[in-house]
Length: 523
Image 1 (cartoon, rainbow, N blue to C red):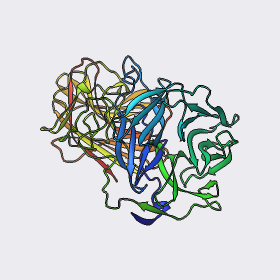
Image 2: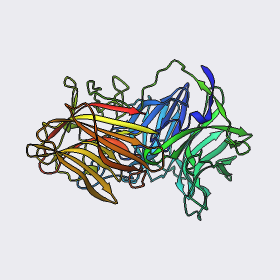
Image 3: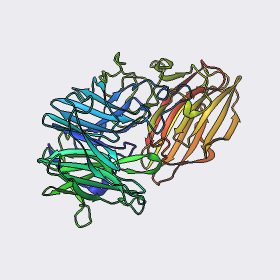
Image 4: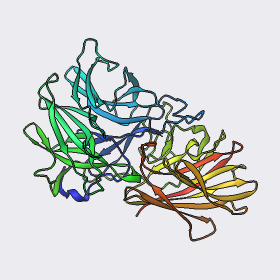
């Protein structure tokens, strides 16, 4: 174990990517962070760290949720802005518990595992518990949840629903905030006192703040107030909502998040200190200039949360849809590297990796007219402040009307594609603007079969921008298109913008696009 002092200004956001609603625990010398993944599959990603500063993929909790039409992008349905969110991760009596609700099914899910990598066993908790947090208290277990009115319900011993005759009460209530009342529960028992940490907005204007309440007993009055109100120098966007954790040497930290425009919602690590039973972050209105970090495995090398893929390797697929154990932690149980996620639940029979040719093959089995309705779109998060993605596309297997390429997945998306028109390859740039698709470029490229696309994304400001480039595979230099795309976070998708590989058929299903040499760069 090694201790080091780190300047607080150099580590925030601690993960410069879209990992919202962080909940955090420590088990022995290892920290785990669970995050919202909404409509992306596999779902509910858990990260791992040994110093709270550097993070890597540890597990996905599920491959499939309920196989609904919305989750599978079938029959015109989708779950954008819905799906799973605000997970609660706990470790109790040698077992991991992961709880969340899904706003498309209106159900509350509980997954249990003896190993953080799984297998995770799924069950439901009767009721719908918004932004829920579990508390194991001796032989009792409680769930805190809600918005505006924060409630507490005692659960039965199997966590299948409310305990008959068990405690049910309101912990905190606020009715008259026109921006955001209390929500985002994180519930703890520390030194025989009960704490609830909540997100909130200033009542006079939109700005996230972090709040806390404490009581001496589970039935006592919860008192508290604002814990942190600071935009960390970023455009008035407050930092709030997340869990707290202690270190092996007795220090405390909180992992909150901040809206960071098009890149999404990024985790922030802040010191949590105590004056008796009162938590505080700032002293005399100021953060400390540096914090002391306890690194439990200083020689550990971390896997990146984004990256290149030449599709030359493939992870072992699991026969059990909830079994997360693979031969190599770098892969998920769909056989993809762990930094990839599918937009909605994939139809994996239409996906193939040819490891000899080093290609990812995406095929179609249905007609689709819009980019955001296409199944098997493969995505990676963007990274602050600037990130770049490029890929080679071979279109020999496309059928008439097929479109395949590289895009930006968000509500107001754009994509650069090759559209097959008879024997011709058509360069196509589509941008969704004010809810409507606009064709920005249509250019015949003759009978060429291989191309390379690139997207450069600048996501520092609340409204960022992206530029697009292309070239024939025989050419050395990329050609820019006269186009700039605004990148911003919207509530319709509720996730940050992502780079996306895609293929869809507008006329006849059955075509195949071949992707190779995917490159990812932070610059």
